Image (cartoon, rainbow, N blue to C red; front, side):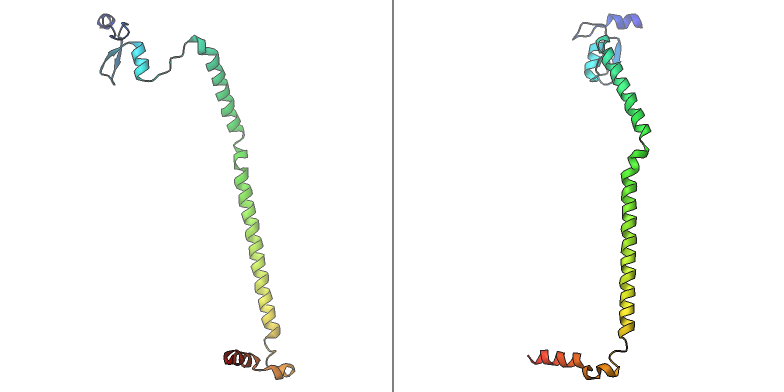
Length: 133
């Protein structure tokens, strides 16, 4: 069968059509295969560049692996800041609640005391004065 494929020549390049292309459903030469599959043919002149690329790729992978811990620092900072803000909010609300309770406790019997007897019903008088205007 190899003898038959050698006898087959590519119409475009007049080279042996020794590769079967499922895409084209026919035998094609190496150049047609490279062109139809959009492959990049790398010959020996690219060897040093490809070696450099592989070194850079390995260094990048190593840098990513060694810095995995550092990739989460910002997320941890955000979480800590949110936690701190929530604690401040809770303390603020607790202090407001304490103030309101203390204020209410101190002034709960003021209206009924004899010291402010002359001001009883003052709110109602002010409202009726405003309505009359």
